Length: 89
Image (tube, rainbow, N blue to C red; front, side):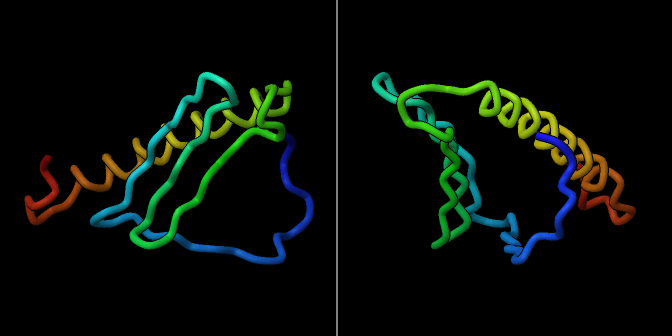
């Protein structure tokens, strides 16, 4: 998975808030599914083939995990840095 060279033709923005969740669903007879729920909208991430995992699937999963961890750190930093004191977990 290299850097994207073509601009996307569509962008979908899903906001985290009350009710947003992420859940991995492992299955014994197929590859896992990552479910991202945003109220009445769900996004399911699956591998390219439901029966086997490719090297590209592994690379994407690692990239996704890295970027999700970076997103979480950025959100936590912003949350703890609120000047009004409401940002302390």
